[in-house]
Image 1: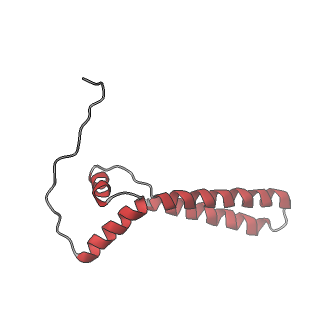
Image 2: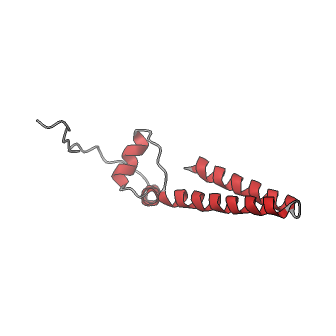
Image 3: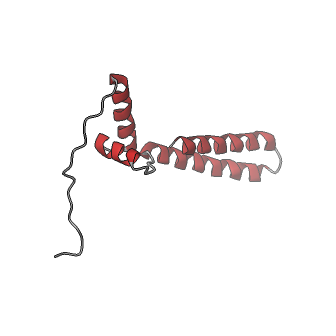
Length: 102
């Protein structure tokens, strides 16, 4: 016998009744997460955290912008410091909001 167990998912759960709008929402969320509907529902049911690919990319881009903004803030030596700091705070809030929605 090999060390790794080769199992296949052969069991089928009962169908889930839902409204057409709910079905569409589930399908869209699964697509955003880059998963099949079955895998998406399985992870939801088993309480696994899922991070949609687009949100990861968005957070990375916002973080880059935050780094560039911080560089401008430091190089400005006080000029427009309030505006730069307001933008930094807004970027941090946006990142946290996206992270909490995941």
